[in-house]
Length: 298
Image (cartoon, rainbow, N blue to C red; front, side, top):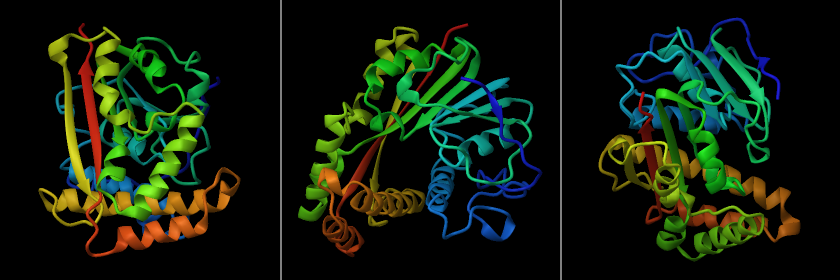
């Protein structure tokens, strides 16, 4: 796997809501060089903004305020929004963003590089013990080899560095959703399981990280968050906003599946019925997400 540069002239994107609001880089703002609202990638930028607000303008729940990373790795970077947030917060660090598909055409900070790679094929081209922050969110749950890939990801963390993994437990959506949601998520779970993916992986992340035996027991932390997709009933407004952003992103993904994977049993009627249910004012569906972070001893 070769490292490829994805540098573009300034400016654009990504705000931690406080520190970065005056930055020349902005996520999800079409008027200032961000991804256009008609672009499917826009919902991923919107989601990144919602996560940034949820974490109080920080990169993650892990305490990173006092760290001075030299190299940061974002696995499954999507639109590059989190990588840009990290590159802006740590301008002296080199940020490597990795994904199966190229980044959308957008402006990037000069300290970002992009690597196109299939995570399921392994990470053998990345240097072991080289990254001060290794981050992945909402990625491993979709992979066929998430549990076996976790130790490989952990091996990339440098001494004194931090691993941060965040993922979903889709079974929470089936447990709290209505019949149309249960039907769609149940079929989604079945199809993904046929290729080896575990859609409840979020609740297993902590065990996988501890199972690597690279981190001390008291240096592994977990935070479970429950996100109401209705945008109501959360512990605070940031939680509600994140729930809404996740609902929108999920519905866009479900619509895409209903059109592109009809040979696997997805239908547009299934997607529409779920959309009506999740957009209903009485929606009670909740997503459980788990964030796990651990610091490697020096």
